[in-house]
Image 1 (cartoon, protein in one colour):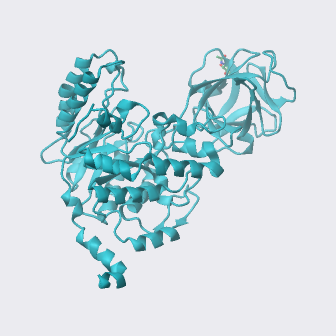
Image 2 (tube, rainbow, N blue to C red):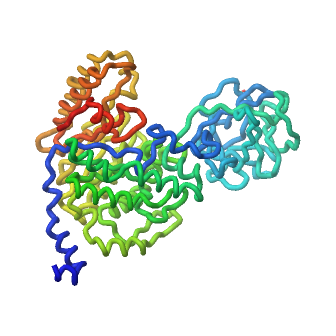
Image 3 (cartoon, helix red, strand yellow):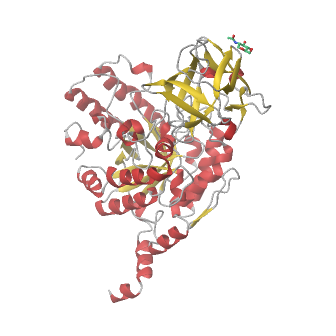
Amino acid sequence: MAYYNIYPVLALYLSCFASLSSAQDLKLPLKSVNLGNWLVVEGWMKPSLFDEIPNKDLLDGTKVQLKSTKLQNYLAAENGGDSIVVINRTAASDWETFRLWRIDENSFNFRVSNKQFVGLSSEGTNRIVAMRDAPGDTETFLIVRKDGEPNRIRIQASNGLFLQAISDTILTADYGGSGWDDSDPSVFTMTIVGSLQGEYQIANGYGPDKAPQVLQDHRNSYITEEDFRFMSSNGLTAVRIPVGWWIACDPTPPKPFVGGSLQALDNAFTWAQKYGLKVIIDLHAVQASQNGMEHSATRDGYLEFGDSSIQDTVEVIDFLAERSNAFKFSHASVQYTHTHTLMKRDCNQQMCRYAKNPALGAIELINEPWAPLVTLDTLKNYYKAGYDAIRKYTSSAYVILSNRLGPADRKELLSFAQGLSKAVIDVHYYSLYSDMFNGFSVQQNIDFIYNQRGSDLAAVTTSDGPLTFVGEWVAEWAINGASMEDYHRFAKAQLDVYGRATFGWAYWSYKCQYNHWSLKWMIENNYIKLN
Ligand SMILES: *[C@@H]1O[C@H](CO)[C@@H](O)[C@H](O)[C@H]1NC(C)=O
């Protein structure tokens, strides 16, 4: 023992060395659960997290349509953008929909369907146009809401004057009056037709003064050591942990993101080791967004992940695999370089994470890339580079490749993955999100699992190919008021079928405001029994 006291670093080194082959201890197939809404926020799972945000219905990515009360027409970006803003539409669709970028609780940019921003014309005419690709002062507007009638608004431009509807085709920022009458040319009704509640929205909604505390409290309380004890004692063998790209910039990620998720992931590894669980790190949110969903931490719902995103994203994977001590994004569009002196100290104390941590089971390179906007070629290029990055540090951790969602061949990654050692294909099976399920009876739902999902899974589970993982599923369906026995049978059908996945499965999620989406609740209330 004296030896260890004198040479603590060497002791750690030796213990790491001894655990080099640890990922091979993995008992497959895994029975795991997603720690959703922990390190990547999804508001639908716990809406109260957003409660204290001022103007919380006007977060980044909120889609609004604006109608002039005087002209009784909607505003539209003519041609979808790169042109003037007109007021001659009697019905609203894409060109009449504006996505907010929140500057502060009252100030916003408006992004049009072709992605330009609404602003003052650069010709000095006070005309409102949608021409700029990046927002500046002249693209920033104050939304003034009427007391007691928050969707009746006036919009103040950067010149201090209000927008007014002069005619069907002339919208200007030159109105100095005030008033809320229908006949007032500066009054608009605002209809919210879509919104996002992801990590970007919560962080930017609370802003730099409040967001760090809110998110730290959430990360400290939402998942604790007690949860790992619960999971372990109730038959689970692993956790899939969604993380966002900003974890690689901890402790000071670019705004509005907030540091601290790395510490939480460290805690998860410590608890996983203590309770004998494996960790699957899942890069759920990548820069530029791979699916436009709030759980990708998108600002406004545009999917922009492409070839130019690959290098930065591989660096995040590289960081997660080894927690390298100097991290920087190399992509020119990202305006910062971050050297992690704090982390360096940390890493020296614990030389064996994450690649050599015995609790590491797998790293998933990206969650739910969306076809066709994320092309198969882009995805394969990324997967190859991400796989190589992980293999620099570990030959034993599994590398998980998520199938594309949307119109994609579910077998499209099989031949590619065949050339990789310890590769896993992730498929997500929900009996939701498609009209097909509306009107399904209980029995039809159960039959669908045994027949359709059974053959779907069999089609990707080949004897010489990658392993398979049902990385997300839930015992919830498009039926209201089903009995406990119905739910029990539905869950059992999925456990039977997804139990054939060679790598395993992961329930979505561990905790959620909706009981059936919470595996913790399902276990506590005897809907699901794993032991
Ligand atoms: C709206 O105004 C623009 C610009 O004058 C014109 O090109 C467009 O056809 C008009 N649309 C409708 C529906 O009136």
